[in-house]
Image (cartoon, rainbow, N blue to C red; front, side):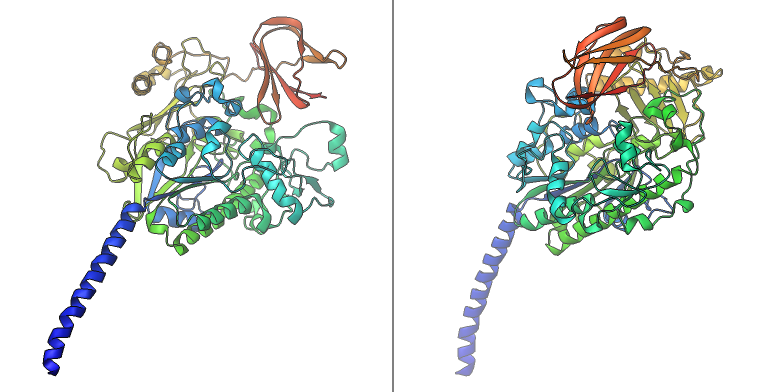
Length: 626
C-alpha cells in the first residue's frame, strides 16, 4: 500500500511542479521580452581626453571612470564634432553634422522652432516614441522646444522659468542652494563667484586677485566665468556637481520599473575653475606639470589670437597655470566620485545588466597649452575627448578601440544597441568598431567649426596621426595648417602655412583634403566646392604674423534717445554685433561704415558686449543698458 500510494502521488506532484515551472518560465520570458534596455547617458562639459588616469595621466585619479572603461569599451581616439558647447551637443542629440542641423554657434541654442534650425528629432524624442520614459538633468544648451519630451518632476524654477530655458538650470540650482547654504559675508581674500554668488578664495591666476569686493564694484568691469580661479566655499554635499548627480540618482530610483533614458549632464569641469573642499586639497599646484607647448610663439598658427590669447598672457605663465591645472583635476575628481555613486546605484537597483551606459564630454580644455584657455579650436587639448560605453553581455569588457570617430556617431550607436530601427541621420553606429567587424569605418575623422571662417579654420581631418586644418573657401586669409602628431604631438610646427618648405608636404595635405571632400560629399555639404578650390600652399601673414594690431573704437551712449553712437575713427567696419552676458547675440547689423554710426540699443536691460568686425580685430567693449 505504501508503495502504491507513492507511485500514485508523485506523478501528481511532478506534473504540478512542471506546470508551475512552465508558468514561471513563460512569465519570466515575457518579462524579459517586455523589458527593453535602458539608457544612461553621462556627459561632462570641457573634459579633455587625457583627464583620465586610464589615458596615461600620472597625477589625476579617476578610479570610477577607469572602472567604467574596463567594464566595456574605451575609445582612445574620440573627437568632438565641434569644440563648442551648443553645436556639438546638437550633433550628439540629432546625429547630424553642424552644417546640417544649423546650430553653428552657442547663440543659436536659443532658437525657436520657427527658425528652422535643428529641425530633426533628438534621440530622446525618438526613444519616447518607442515607449521610453526620458529625463534630463544638468546643462542643456540646446533649443528649448526639443526639451518638451522630458518628464523631470521639476520642470520650472520658483520664478516660473523652464529649467531648459537659457539660465534655467542655474536658477534651479539657486532655488536649491539658497535655503541650504545662504550667501555668506566675505572673508579676507574672498570674492563672490559670479556664477553661484557664493564666496571663493582667489588664487594668483584669478583676474580679480588682490581686489576687494568694493574695488570690483567700482571698476565696472564684468568678469566672465573663465576669469575666476580659486576654492569655492560651498560645502561638497551642496556643490553643483553633487546637485546634478543626486538628481540623476533619484531619477534612477524613481524609474527602476520603467524603461528609461536618463541623461546626467555635468556643468564641470567647465569654468569657473572653482573646486570645493576636500577636492581642492587633493592636488597641489606645485606638483602640476606645465604643458610642453605653453611658450609656443605660434608664428605660423591659425590660432595665434584665438581665445583672447594675446590679452590673457597669464595662461602662458608657467607658474600661474599650475593653479588652473590643479583646480581642473579637482573638478574632474569630484565628478569621478559621483559617477561612481551613480554606477553603484544602478547596480544596487539591479539595472546594471540591462542598461547601456555612455560617458563622454562635449569638448576639451586647453589648460595652458599654447598659452591658451578654453576650447573652440582643433588642437588636441580642445578637440580630443573621453568616450566609454558599457553594456554587459553586449560589449566585451576591456575593449579598447583605436579607430578615429566623432561623438556625432553616438546617435546611431544608441539605436543599434537598444535594438530599435535605424533613423536617418549623418551618424553611424560604433558597434562595428567595437566588435572589429567594420574595417572601413574609423580610418579618419572630420570635425567642423563653421563660425567666423574668415578668422579661423572651418574643418579638421585627422588620419594616421596627420592633421589638416583649413577654411572652407578659396578667399579666406586664414593660414592652412598641417601637423604630424607622431613627430610633433604638441602641434607646435605647422608644416604648411608660411613654412618656406611647405611644398614638401603638398602631397600629404592634398591627400587629407580629399578625405574632407569625401566626407563633405557624403553629407551633402554646401562647402564642397570652396574646400576643393582652396590653395593648400597659400601663404598669408594676416593670421600667423606677430603684427596683428587690435583696433579700438569709442562709444557715445545717449540715454535720452536710447541710442548709442560708435566711432571707428578711420577704420572700415564690416558689421556690428551686441551680445548679452550669456553670449547670446541680441543685435546684429552688417552694413559697412567708416567713422561714426548711430544705432538703437536693444530693449533688454543689463550689461552688453559690443563687438565690431573689420579688416583687423577690434577689442570688444561693454555697455550698461537700463
